[in-house]
Structure formats: C-alpha cells, structure tokens
Image (cartoon, rainbow, N blue to C red; front, side, top):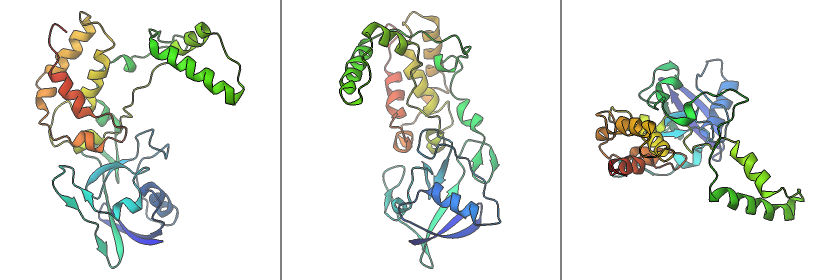
Length: 264
C-alpha cells in the first residue's frame, strides 16, 4: 500500500491505495469514502470510451489507464526535453488532477464532451445518421478474405460451424468499421495551438481515403484541411501523438495531409 495525496480543484484528499490501482480506481474509492463530492466523468474503465480524460500531474491521460505506480517513476515531459519527477508531501505521493483544456468545465474535472468533438467535421462518413434498419454498405476488400480465413482457423478450437465465404463476407459488410480514435480529447488539450486540432485533422485524413479524388466530399474535406485553421495551424509540437491512448499518431496524419497534391 502507498499513501497518496490527491489534489482536485484545490481540495486535498488522502487515500491509501495499491500501486497497481489506476487513478480511476483511487477516485472511485475516494468517492465512496468521503462526504465531499468529487465530480469527474467515466464509463468503461478499460480505455475504450474516452470519457475519463484529465491532466494527471501535468500530462494528459485516461484515468482508467494511468496507474499509481507510473506516477512513482520519472516521466518525460510532453515536449520530450524535460523530466517530471514524482512529488511527495509528508510521505504521500502527490497526484494533481486538472480538467482537460479547451473544453468547458461542468464541475470538478468533468468537462463537456461536445467542446472536444466539435472540431470533427460533419462531413465525415461515420458522423452521418442512419436509421436502424438502413446499414451502411461497405465495399469488400482483401481484408475480408483474410478475416474469413482466420475465422476458419479459429473454428478448429471453438468448434463453431464454418459458413460459406460469400455469406460470411456479406454479413461483415453490413457492419460499420470503427475508427481507432475514441474522441477522448487528450490530443486537443495537450496541443498549445488554437486551430481545428489533431483529432479533427486525423479524422479528415482517415475519411479522405474513403472517397475518390474527384468526389465533392473529398474536395470539401481537403479544403477544410488546407484552411487557415487546418494543418497550417499545426506547429509540430507532436504532443498529440505522445498522449494518444490509441496510437492513432495524429501528428503523422497531419503531415500526410500536408503532402497531398491536387492531382492525387
């Protein structure tokens, strides 16, 4: 066990916790054992929903993935040039939690998610609304055949029946492919510049590949990327890629947008 001093909105809370606990584990314990309300957002507890983002001892992170033992170690600063050293107060590990930047605060460290998502263009295909009985039809590619082969290999161990390849692919095409970005807002908060932001530009980069270059949607998305609040606003701090919990590497996506030519 280790004693930790949590500082949230200038209020202090002391808790005994395991080094293997996540920040969210500690907050849940605190909330259940204190009369003072602690306001924060969370849902999945395993890094897939993106709702528990916060600034943890100076660096953006998901509270459900950041563990106490990580804060006991020296960590590189966001710019990669300095070191963040653990701080202690009377033997207690100091954990300072702050709300994400560039978002309105609801209360405590909980922020309005809308503020973090509005940089993602409405033109993106995955933001289009469809009725429940109207699935988006995707084009088949080699990945579906590979997926079918892998499924068949798995049946040797699962004992599941092997479907016809055409039937398997047809069902797979009725599912929406999910993008890796979980819209947690960490990249936006970590970037010191004010522009559309890493999440929005990375989303544009992904969606461009879904449209032919002579398509009007493609042209509109490229126009948004090239606007003054698009990739020209990126000054290559690379903070966004350093804090991304999904490894989307938005900084690289932005650079790839820069080199797209009109005739591609």
